[in-house]
Length: 126
Image (cartoon, rainbow, N blue to C red; front, side, top):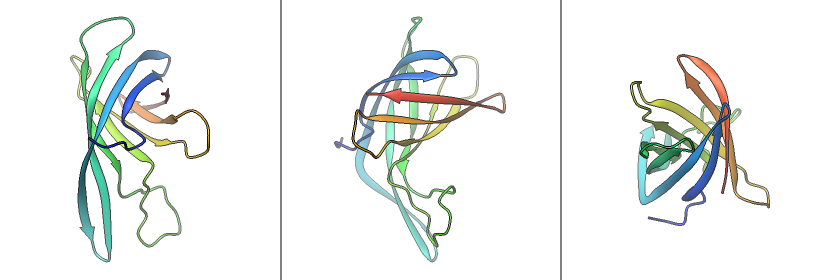
């Protein structure tokens, strides 16, 4: 694994549910071609453990790559974007997407998640 800024242990809060997110980012670069653009990203794996207890839950996704929220770019790529799911029991994997904060200070990230089609906020600090 690499020292990609997303790797590590994070204190995570999503819609006031609290837990620990542990993620590792692969060194292997994934290339996706959509001519004229080429996007690069890295696979991400990990676990999420709810603070209320229970076994760690599977986390999977990617960092970087195509970013539909970048406006005015022919090939919108973001190296500080993260997209992942958490496999909560009894439900389809819940999608999360967000961004790593780029300014100086403690490592942080924030974004949106969707539960039953409804968006909710989340954030994490390292």
